[in-house]
Image (tube, rainbow, N blue to C red; front, side):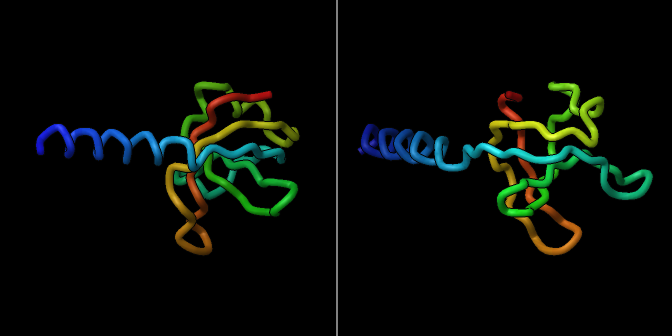
Length: 93
């Protein structure tokens, strides 16, 4: 019984790990007002803005107003206006 629970838990984690990977192409911009600013990317296909959680890892602050392609993992869904979906960038192309 204990092994069955462990196997089902493992399958649950591995099944959810690959569902939220997406490819985005869009313009990088700084949004918000001080002290609540954040870096975002606006997808050119869907016109949806995403808040980038790990912008320092890929130095995306220097790529403001440039169109880039990224692979990202969805961390948190959008709540509504002013609260965009949060992504973590995996790769910049």
